[in-house]
Length: 232
Image 1: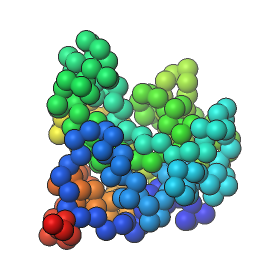
Image 2: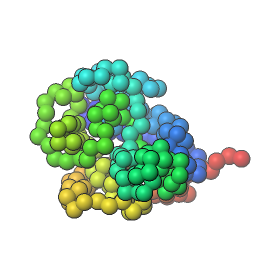
Image 3: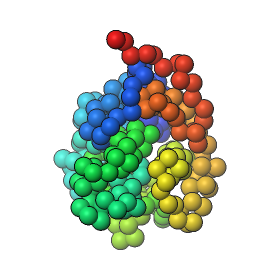
Image 4: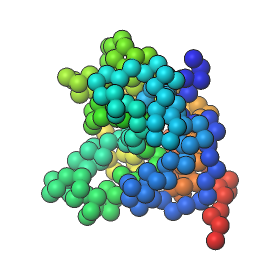
């Protein structure tokens, strides 16, 4: 049970110091080796190998889309929709236009601090919904503790990842000048206090910093001297 609750890696693959990815496609390519050593997805704590999810490892039961439930997809904690809707480019052509013509959007879309491996079905169900406190819905995804309320367009993540979600929202808000509502800020402040950074989150922050070139200060300090230099 303890192992199942580990939301991400406890031991990361060593990566060379790298320029921050310029596109979402490049970010996804860099994310695979970052997570491959333990390969634990975000919302339910399932293990995975390559692109295939071991649903039994976390007691996951597909809600509707069994095929999508069996594959890993890369999820933005702060959705691209949220990032883009605060920029003019989205009004003139949506995400495709932003990715093609807005450099700031591309940087935010490709930020590895905001990117996590997710069961495809949960990624699709989460959509661009905001996070919130919700009544627990038993067995929506088997033993997975994440809850999606489609009518309210809200998601309650499992306890083990609530603090990381909050700190990611604060980081993305600061770095990319994203507005947070008063209600969201109060929720994330409560989550960040109730669920302080664990060792796995600090380790992830250090390793992502070695790729991006900077860490998430809401998680803690990083030591860039620990990053292996890329060989010529």
